[in-house]
Image 1 (cartoon, rainbow, N blue to C red):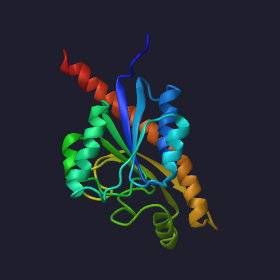
Image 2 (cartoon, helix red, strand yellow):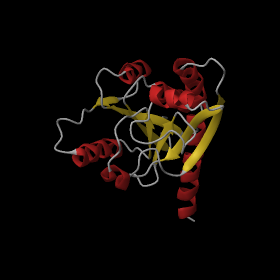
Image 3 (spheres, rainbow, N blue to C red):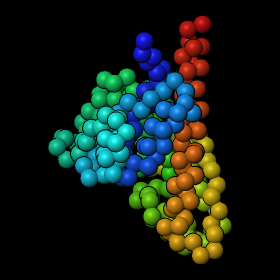
Image 4 (cartoon, one colour):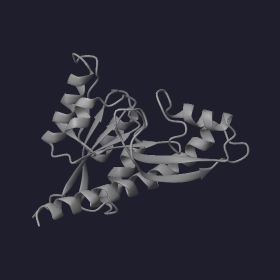
Length: 209
């Protein structure tokens, strides 16, 4: 008898997909209990995340925004694909497009993002990847880190779920700092997803009492 996981996670990615893979691994080894990553949606055909999905055996849809009439239609279609597969939580994993309000309405309080800094520092439009680490080094910060938060209609904004601190070391480059932050992200994101799903499970169980 096949056991169907209680929660299905949908992931949006634009790049390498390392956080996507960390979530798949965490569901498959039981760290995130009673859950599976059911669908990856990627907006760039050449993104590494697409190849990771193929290797991991996770369904992947490549959906570029240009063929759609506008952003609202594009994100409505993405929400349709997620809901068609029973997705209960959406995770952004290096997704470089701003999520439209049309999708926020479909998954209220159920869309997570991970950012490679200690928000509210070094967030906002255009602040992603190497740009974040360059800004941290220019400011001569002693520490940086990563943040998992529930998204809203502003860039890198919304209630924080978890944060983790990463020290900035003398002689760090954007590459060395990015590598250490990325390593921390792969631990923090599964932990945050686990906590959110446990909260959703509790609400669901409480609703039936």
